[in-house]
Image 1 (cartoon, rainbow, N blue to C red):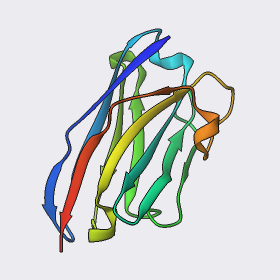
Image 2 (image 1 turned 60 degrees about the vertical axis):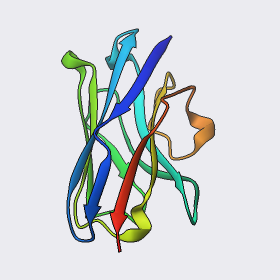
Image 3 (image 1 turned 120 degrees about the vertical axis):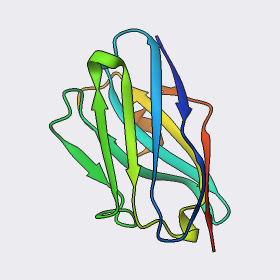
Image 4 (image 1 turned 45 degrees about the vertical axis):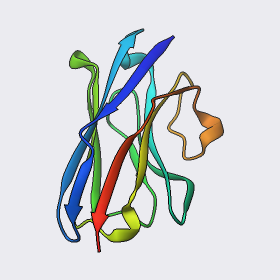
Length: 124
């Protein structure tokens, strides 16, 4: 079991940057593939990014590729999403997710554990 909590959300102007984080307790973070999903106006449970257990492999949704960067620090039980050049359509609640499966996953069904979410608002 692992418990996830997101933090670092807020409001930024279009074109700005924000970094959100996911913290974990319970089983070691290194045991899990991690990912970010988002839900908000015009966004329905959309995959954002995923990262392998050791951080060597990542995958991004086409809508955020080149703007967002996912990373992790297993020693600190932390996972991050650096969001640059934010757009109003990025406005959503962002959810941290963890999976005990071997490989990275881009769909909700690939994850077993979820955080409560953190709000990201991009002013238009």
